[in-house]
Length: 162
Image 1 (cartoon, one colour):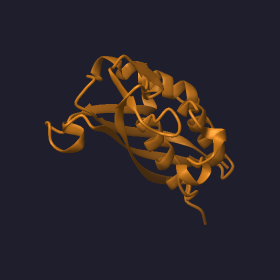
Image 2 (tube, rainbow, N blue to C red):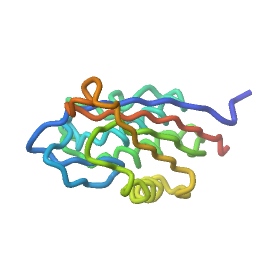
Image 3 (cartoon, helix red, strand yellow):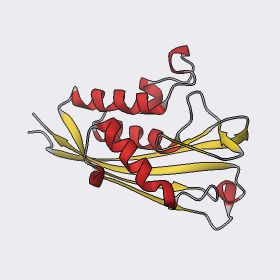
């Protein structure tokens, strides 16, 4: 007997630094700092990838897309998300829905959430209504509050298609 539905959880964090573009949810933000990472460091997409891979019991993003591989250096994280969708499909799964939260003091994200939702839905080939994104701050506490980094959390439901 196999599970027809599974739930996964993902988390990611990257440091904010000067000299990098800021990408969140596949969308470029105008901001004086960007996220440091081997790829474009899109924390939201990375958290979603980890949640999807975890739900399908397929390890994590670092296993499939190692940060010491030239193949993934400065890669657009939307490509990693598309590849993750293809990976879970090899086990007969498709995305049911995603619920994600980005933690950042700045930039303010609320106005661009619909754009991020549409971008991610398009990449994954799912309805935009299946992608929930929320934004919060940490009330100036911790590394996020000091604007040293941005973190993201994602919970996903995947469904067996076979």
